[in-house]
Image 1 (cartoon, rainbow, N blue to C red):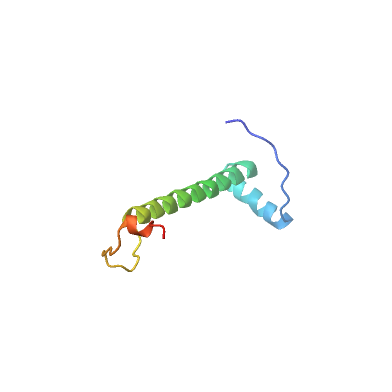
Image 2: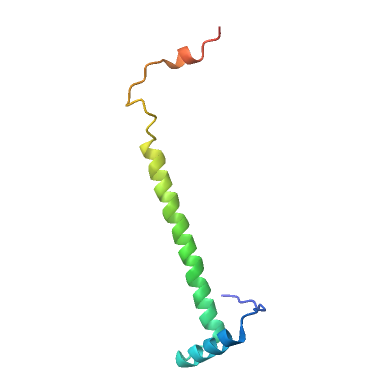
Length: 82
């Protein structure tokens, strides 16, 4: 995968903690941040897909319009011109 360098401003204390964590995991700060951002993007994509499926299911079920399934008018009658 092609990579691009960016400039990131974070508190010094956070950077020190990240560097320590990277050493413990035999990784780099860049790799740790890349993995964390990838998880964040994946979570967002999964949440969107889940919400989309949920709403499509609701559309298939239809909404309760309060008529209890009884339609008392005909389509043609609704469109008659006086």
